[in-house]
Length: 233
Image (cartoon, rainbow, N blue to C red; front, side, top):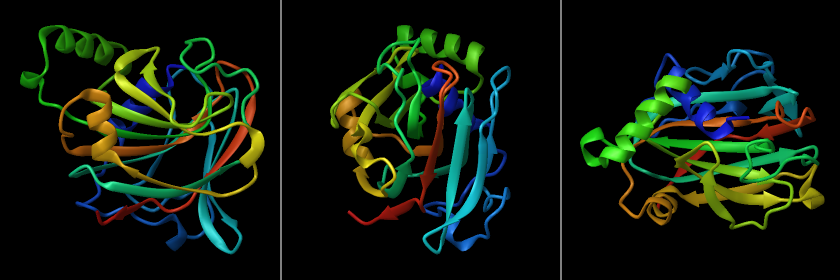
């Protein structure tokens, strides 16, 4: 699936925006299909929609995204300086047929997008041209994004450009079946990750999306996400 560009575009589709440094907690809501605003479940045209809902897990409400030959995500718009972003996530399995870095295997058991907006006048002519082409195909995508993924084979720490666009940097945080069924904690310095990927200081973050996709591989997977948190440096 064109996961990373499309997922980044979903952030731009969300109708409401969170205030600075405000990330509404899933744990404060009740289980069901209604997400705490301004989080919104998202789908893509011509691709089966995954099941996105809140469920109870170990006594707390968490986000669950289940995709069977589908794409599912929850997205939120916001604007804040690139933060220390923390969350926890869990998958029931990894995808057998996924292939990191290939278009035909561009599916993930779980992934978290962080999008950024670099002013057009700060991009080169070639970058502006590629971005305009991407927006023709995928809508109002951001000018840059980091896609944190739970892969099946690549070692944690692996980083490469999306096969669908060099403005999206994919970073492997978890890999393989060893942690399947177990909650894992993440804490990322988003500004440092952006600088490592793009060689410049990070512009403001404009959105976050969490979910998974299996439309390329035709597999079935479920991912769970706990609250996303902004932490002090």
